[in-house]
Length: 599
Image (cartoon, rainbow, N blue to C red):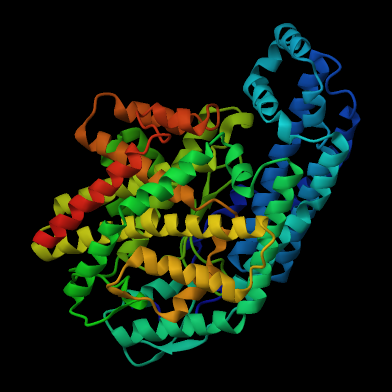
């Protein structure tokens, strides 16, 4: 394994492996100056209160000033968050982040009058404003979106109350993040070489990929032993998160937390339900894969810690980051020279924070602020999985790049529903390229196994997560208590259903809910599964050479939120209100499963 011993401190990470956060702010002093400027703009914005709907000119000035505040808030918040994520044990940046959060709450309060005042403008008067004031054309979609959601926007006074309550809404997620990343210490396990090695979030999956079953089991049992120590505390935090989501959805007069979460992107609840239903129809394929995995590993019993170990050996099990970049670039060649040039720009110009260090936030993501390049956080460990993570996160980053370049600020940010399409499309193109280049049977087996595991981890596992969320949030809505025992039983039973009879469902897996950060952004994870399905459809069109598909795809990437997510995907000929994309993706899973059987 590449990583042994304890993690390096942040200061010991080479500059070339760190993102250029100075592209946002050269130093903390410049951040402080803009923070003060943002405080001033926030106070000044209150002058529009009670006047936003007086005439077209005032409405335009209000919306323009609101965007000015929002753009600066985004920069201030992203910098504080990214610096905090570099080392979450650093008290300086903990404070910066808390200040940014607090100011964000004040901004929400200061701007809370805008939506109610817009909704108080009669339709005929708003139409006249749009006709009389050409500048309002920019906000036409924004204005009509707000009116679409009119039933869920409250009075000015109540919007102000909800804005003031937002820090309490953020509290469960903040508590979990600090506990999970800064306070939790899993200690050491014995590595493959018999030497002590630190168990961390970033290394956990790497240990589960080990060919030494003792290492896999020890990592699995050690990690969940620690979560079990805190299961009641974590259940209380989890229940608080369910409660805050329910509170805000009820205040906004939604029928459920799920309905509230989907309404922002105008996504029908039937899409969520349809995903779970279609995956349930195809659980037999998942069970067949588990049976094949058990057979290929030659095990009498397949345990949860045997799910990640490759079924075939790679010729090269470790990739330097330079090799990873080369592999990704070659795999994305079907997207054309323009796309590859943007990819290279990201590689060469400090978009990526590469290495794990002490206190660094676990996982990987892409984020940024309008007007600057995206930033990608990784904890790169040299595995093939992390080569795909690089392709995945750069898909997000380039999506943001296209969108920011093409759209004005109000529409540059794309909805979460389409957020996973570009990232997963990159992965699908990459696996196709690697399979095409595979030199022998063993390598091909390894790659097919990897792709099947992507299906298992994204389409099946994230749908299982989505079903878990649906069940526990419904219980919260019914006033039922979410104890550690209750959460563990629901989660354990879902694992048994999804993995089937050939898997030993170890008791420790019942605690997996306690370590999933995305559960603190309720009803987010289903979009990995829908996005994966859409991406498989789009990548298939690209690889088949469908006329005009690359240009259509780049148009999709450039649209931001200027159209509803369902309509955006239709640009590429994919309709997510239909079961077909999920059904077709699961059929592809079946095809690769059969190919692995034959090999």
